[in-house]
Amino acid sequence: MRLIDRWNNFFFAPKGPRDLAICRILFCGGMLVHLSLNPYWRWANVAHAFYRKVWLYRALGLSIVSEPWLKTMQFTAMGLFLLAMLGLLTRVSLAAATLWILYLFALPSSFGKTGHGDAILVLITFVLAVSRCDEAYSLEHLLRTRLRNSPGRKPGVTPSGEYQWPLQLCRILLALVFFGAGVTKLRRSGLDWITTDNFANLITQHLHLGHRPITHWGLTIARHPALYKPLAAATILGELFFPLALFSRTAKKFIIPLAFITQILIGLIIGVWFVQFMLCYLFFVPWAEVLNRTSFLDRRRARRHVPTDIIEVL
Image (cartoon, rainbow, N blue to C red; front, side):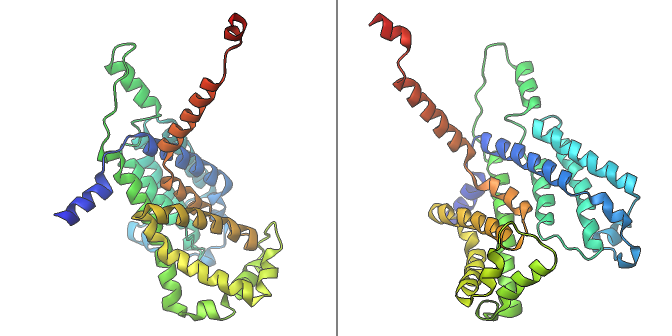
């Protein structure tokens, strides 16, 4: 029973709707930017000699449509995420967006370009679609509130586990991605991934593939084993221990910021930006607590400020 209680508390502890709603807004906004910067319709012009259907296309009997249709699909997906961000037809928009991006994100994989961060974006979009992420900071929630309640009355929102489990599930998905990456490195290469020149070769390879980082740190690190070997070890340790952030608040305070900084460093060193994972970090931030602290600081500043009319009276 104690184990069951911990399980229920982990997934269904009563929580307000603000954290989930803010994550919905920021995630959908991030997806809107991500889609606008990645024209998936260009894959329609790639030579079909490289085309190999992924299992999804084979199972559903799908094929690549023409460039105009792909443009229509991509702009439709962007419109759906915009609606979800605003909170209008939120769940319907997210459900449709899940199907749209599932098709679009599978396109590069059909040509051998595997996107390591695309799958989790599809899964998180689906999780939001079946959650109650629209019950705060949304246009439809505002309309429902005005229709159901008399003017001037502000109904209280009862904390519920319905606002907790989607956040926890999204966090678990990201933890599994990183943990799986760390385990795979050790299974395929063992400690050689750390002790050999593997990490330096990876940096050099990415630079020769045409990536243009904004710094020259990559080549400098690749020349010094005292730099790239500790970084390789830190990479695997960070991936293996990332799940601790799910259960320990202390671990969360260190692991999440360090993982985010690591993603930034990867972009600066080799020019590869895992924007998809950066969107997933949003679900680890206690947004309601941040907003409460900000409003508390504003109230303290307001108390310290003495109005000029009072000074004149004195």
